[in-house]
Image (cartoon, rainbow, N blue to C red):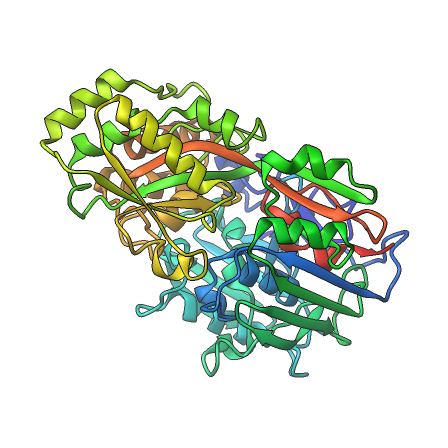
Length: 527
């Protein structure tokens, strides 16, 4: 294996760009053994001060939440894990690879074996040292045959794991030029011995350590004195208070009781923007709001019914009335222009009540279609469901909306009821998005989609080293999913957060996920 330094080394830690000049190399470069990066030593940022307490008022917390990274599926545990835990790599706001617990990433010539040099001197919150074996065990737990991890789908191509000195070697079943990006998945925070003994213990290696966890109520954290990176983790204390009611969240922000809130409703953005000391942060990214149909469950196992429902969505109306312009029309695929190698020539699906009616009659279904909805799915989800009910009625399709409780929605409704509203924040690469959710057998396959041709295209795209060919493979797979799958994507949303600009500094736009990709508490500091 040959190491080369990343050209993007102007930040505290080296980054690999998702381009031919970075991680996705052409066949010639891989043949010569190129790819790899070495992180520069951490250095303090200019300006940040240490001390103080940050309190975040966050929506989408549940009494069923767990600190087991494998099971994290909603916003509060996601943010807690990103605040307390670390992964081998992160994704920078510009889409490049930011090395964290891995100091160097090196592949073999055909990208079937990847070596991760593990950073020395890192300690877990219990004081024990973090080493390569902890990384191996963490990946083994998430990839295991009995695993229910949200990251299991992206690890399905792993054939072997080994700790070799100070490094971890990952052998794949087939070439994957994008594999290091998969290691940024928020489920893959490294735990002592992989978390096998007690996966929900809350022991990680990030800048803050757990003090108290009350599911659905609060998460209290304090600075981890042994944290390795002086450029992050500036607060003495961080607290997440679960405030699922959007009005209550906004009131707490205005009153200064919390300094950051998430999931701002588009309809109140203009109002909140006029409040002194409050800053609204809207960021375009890969997140999308969707309706999921189980392809293996009646009546949605009928392809004509699925097509009828897709054609019965008035996407433009939803973007206008639900997002208030803070988003864009979707196309029943989980990727958009924010993704590298996205093919924007794919035909746009439009609202067509006549064709929707045709497919509905052809399906033979003649009873109301039951749609489960709650605003816990996304801000305005119930309004979106009602708009869909109206547009479907124009096509002669009766839709019955069953409003579910916000608490427990992500544990009791999502991925359990055959037709429901949902939300995905997206992933760094198309491969990761497709593999996490839509491959046959993926743990989080929330449409029960299974298509051998689609699976083969995604696997082929992973190992394709030519950008143009890989782009074409992703486009072909996207069309199969769009036309045959159970996914309806009316709109791509913007992440709309808000914070007290008179209380905190250091906010940066990050298109990967809300709250600066969950790192607001890690990177911001007291004003």
